[in-house]
Image (tube, rainbow, N blue to C red; front, side, top):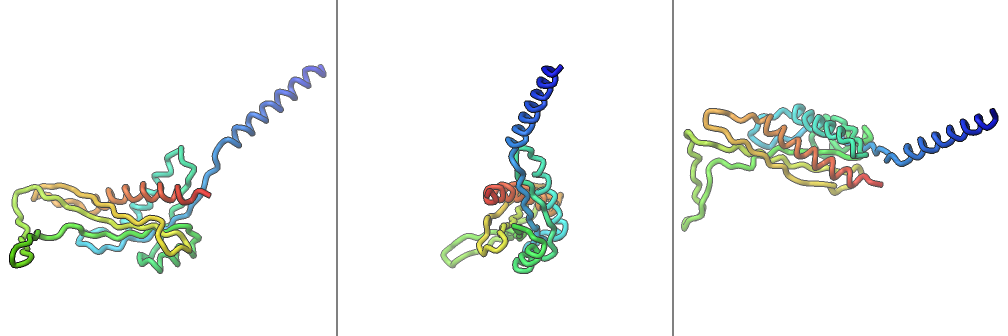
Length: 194
């Protein structure tokens, strides 16, 4: 009987040791708070600032589903789109990083050519042809308390359509937001390793 008790105790100790070894080998999650400011729209595109911010937040949160990563992004919506105000608001909400975006229109109306008399602008000719709409979104991530950005880049997306269809500005921004979210998450993951 005493022998059976010793075997049972030994099994319990072995199981406990294996369970603790498995728990200790599991990497610890790193929680990083990132504030997302509404985009500044300096283009002709009709993208609502809160809708743009919410799309960026949605894409950043969706990246959490990657089970291989130990990074957990806690995404905080900010109200201010201006850099200094957004940084202060993010500091008040204890964010480690702030994502700032600016929507630009990289395409110009018409084109130009250099001639003997200088630059001649040629008008855009509308007709039954395929047109391409391009949107650029400049973005930067600033770490709290540091003046220079951790990342500063541009996402350019385009959509082709015929002359009768109007491309959706929101769908262009959604595509850009997806690219931005992936790049931001990768960079924050690299920079937040202790």
